[in-house]
Amino acid sequence: MSEEKWIFVVDTEQYAGNFERDMCAFMTGMTGDCGVGGEEAQLFLEQTGTTEDENTFEEFVTLQSDEHGCARPTAIWSTEGKSFAYNSVAIFFGKKPTEELVEIMIKRAKEYAEYARNAEEEWDRKDIKVVAFRLLKEETVQTLDARWIAEYT
Image (spheres, one colour):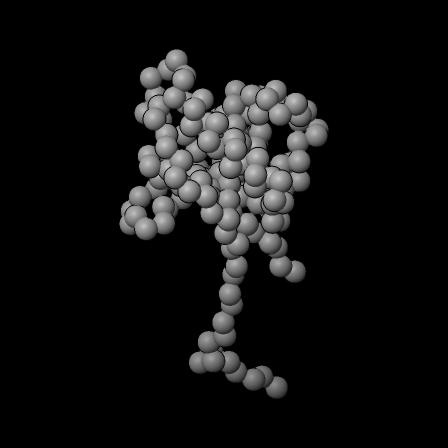
């Protein structure tokens, strides 16, 4: 049985490790086990007029464990065309997000940049510039190495 894996990527001009969990929560209302982005997830619900039970993203977004074993719906991602740059935010999906969900994420990513700019705290993320979006389908390919085939009778 194969499991679909989709990744929605927001490319920015700044290191995404400073804001990926907050941005994901603001865009989708989803947080990981650590709860980072709780305030932004609450803003998502308020601003979209959605309750936690009605949040369609719950049906699509999946959690993946980070290097510390914390399950999260997001991670930093390598930025296309920029070697060794992790200026992108990846959000993980267990099935292809609908066009409506993609449109919501694009709109809310742009709104998040404005939200961060107007925040009272002095963050490194203050001047986030969103530059592109990508929807990726992750596929696993298995190949057979014929050198290790043996018949047993």
